[in-house]
Image (cartoon, rainbow, N blue to C red; front, side, top):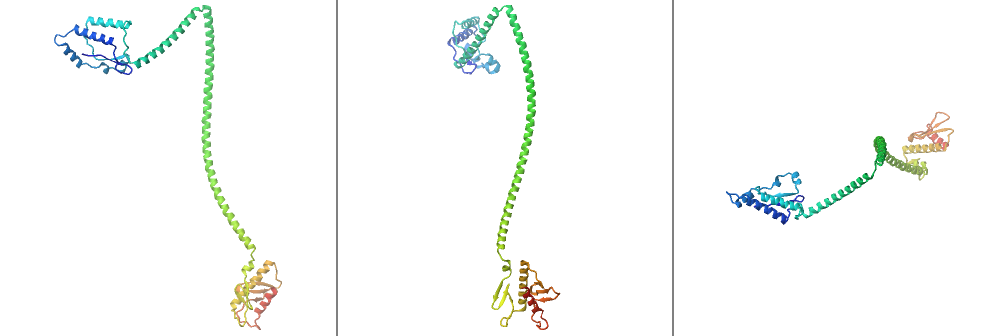
Length: 350
């Protein structure tokens, strides 16, 4: 035997059918069953065959068709209906509609509560609109023709004022749009200038970094130069306190012989000194006297010293005679006395 199952059209949960509605459906099916029995096939077999071939009509329906129906019906009712069953169905339906019989709505409790809240809200809005309409109609019924004309004139004047206000606001809107376009153009120009300034700032930072690096290099170089200058000044101060002649010419004595820069000047029978050493000693002595005369700013009257190492000599200012300060030991004091006269001239200069 086929059965009918109701589903909530919102949450699709199976519903517990009211006993009155189930009894009405059961009586309708029994009336159909007794009204048209099949002579060829037992009722049970016919119902079993019908049950085996039944399908769910909701499975082939679209979402729009399902939304049109408040609930889903599962099962296939019998197509053979008698006049008595139809009349019973109509009668029970009328009793349900007229409120003579209470039947639960085919919705679950939660969905029913939500539906009632929605209907209450709609009812409240409808009642408010109805009250407004009633008050408006009552007010219209109390207004005379003259008052209505005056009201129309007032409304027309207000409409014209609103139109003027609309025109003014439209003009202001156009002005605002124009101002907005102008400001947007200025903003774009400012953005372009800002980008240019950012690029300039970036270039300035690069230049600053390069100048900073150059400054550091120059600072290092200046520090190095200052260190060198301090060293040179210390050396100069040390040299200014040093006698250059004492450093250049070292004068010692070795018994009866004088020594200048490790060269012995003179010879005695006990100490035989070579002429080369004696000539070099005379050259150092002539250079020392020449340096002293330059430092002191002295000008010799009769002679001019010419220091030339171990071949130094003295030139006479009265003539071109050269008085020697060197010898090889082979001169004759009677015939060649330039060496002796050179020593006397040196003593004269000294």
